[in-house]
Each structure stands twice: as structure tokens, then as C-alpha cells.
Length: 345
Image (cartoon, rainbow, N blue to C red; front, side):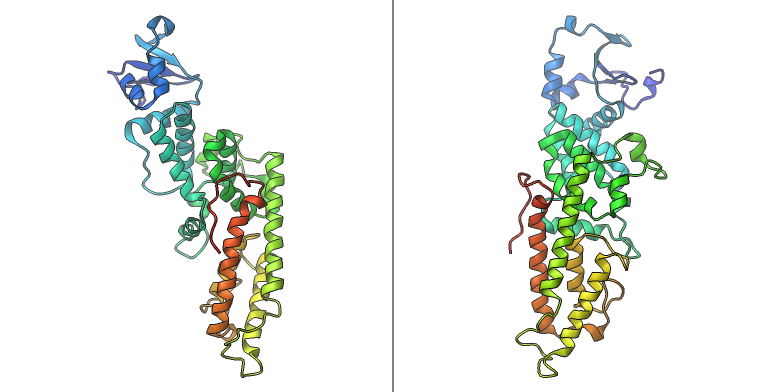
């Protein structure tokens, strides 16, 4: 603690020093008392009960992680703001959330939880917005640049209990989209330029129980997509008002759906680039494939598009299936008691 006076949280006019195992912060008791009933009660103790002093100032020793305490105190003084979303914000947000719960600072708890809920939401509309925000300027999926690895969210939710339980369905679903080897390995400790690893050592892998949970959910996702393909795309009949029905009994639309089924199968088995075990993405992409001319594993040539009536009927079925998937996520991941906003059918 030789350089404590160079800290942005060492105020010459401060009247209380908070110390950890390796740091100290000279702050204002009035600020602490104003926002935290825990500190208010603590500072009301007679001086004889708090006999230690640093720099001639009343001192309280806390057992918090130094970085967490620094982020928490800075948030008390300056607020919790970020210029833009980035994965490196997570150690700050999680530290503030952890200590705002401990010291009963409700507004910081709500602010930090809101930031995490933006990326790990409890409703499908917010999830779709999250996915849209993760698309880079070149059309690539860049979630890892703007938000932390889902393993960190899962571990934090278990650490903090009910306060973070609503983050779990989205985080577990997100992780289940990774391939099996990456789920097992976890967040790589050798990740280049990672601010998270240095701030949260050892929080890179799931527990055995969580690994089983993720794999169960992953299997449920894959099973659902396979079942949907069998029931809704393989040998799909054309719409009653199919525009191509007079021509070889709608053969053009039937071929379009056969092509669509082929492309979706290629995506879910990893033959073409895509996201594994992600029925929300797959179903949404399938609708887009029949709605516009795009290429690739989630694309289709105009010659393979069904007529407007058949596309509309399929879109209704696929979007209803997306809502069903969202509602099933808590059950797939053993979280039936977690608050998760159901989507209407």
C-alpha cells in the first residue's frame, strides 16, 4: 500500500479509510452513509470499537477484493457509465453488483443488473435486439467483442444467487450454441489482451453440474430443430391458396421448401458456417431465407423461393416455433423456477 496516496480514491479531506489486504481508500463517511445502510450502521459504532487508524484517520478493514471495492467506490462517487458496450466492462459491472448487494446500495444494484440484463435478457424481443447489436459492420457475429463469455455470467449468477437468477436462461442458452469442445475448455486462459482473465483469475470453466446442464440444453435444442424439420419442412405441403398450385400441384414451392430443409440441415450439422444448436437463430434465418435473396448456409437463390402465400404460412409456423423455443429454455436448462418472460403464441 505504498502508493495509496496516488489513488483516485484517496481524498485529503476524507474522514474514513477502507482497507483490504492490499489496498486502502480514504473516502468520505457521509457518502458511504448516504447510500449504504450497512456503512451507516458501521460508522455509528463507537470509536473504541474501530480503533485502527491509517494516516491518522479512522480505519475500517473489509474483506472485499481490492478491484471490486475500487469499482464500487468509484461508482458511488461518479456513477456507473460506459461510452460503449465492451467485454472489458464486465469486471467493473460485476464488482459493483457484488458489493452493492453486500452493502445494500439498491440503485447501484439495479443499474449494474440492468447492464447485464441488456446482454442476457429475459424476453425474446430483447434477445433479438442483443443478437442484432452483435453483428459487425461486415455482417459477422462479434458477440465476444461487446460482451463477456457466458461462463462468467453463469458463474456470477451462481455466486450471487437469486439476485442474478434471471440472467441464467439466456447465458446457458448462449453457451449451448458453442461446440462441445469449447464448452468443455471454457474461456481460454491464454486469450490475448484479455482484461477479464487478469481481473477474475480462475473463473474460466463451468462446474461439472453446469457442464451437464448445458449439454442437456444443447441436446434439447438439437432435438427440437430435428423434429421441426421433420414435421414442418420435409415433404411440406403447399398453402391452400398457393400461387403455384395450378402448375404441377405447386412443385416450385415444394422444391423451395426442400431446398430450405437441405440448407438448414447443413447449418445445424456444421457443414456450412453457422451457429450450432441455436434454434432461435435457425428458425429466424429460415424465414429470412424465404423472404429475400441472400446466399450461403442461411441464404437462398430467388429461384428457390416459395410463393408469397406459402412463405407467409411458413413464416407464421416458424415464428410461433421461436416463441415456443424461448418459453422452453428454462425447462431445457433445469430452471423452471426462474423468472423468464413467456412469449405468447
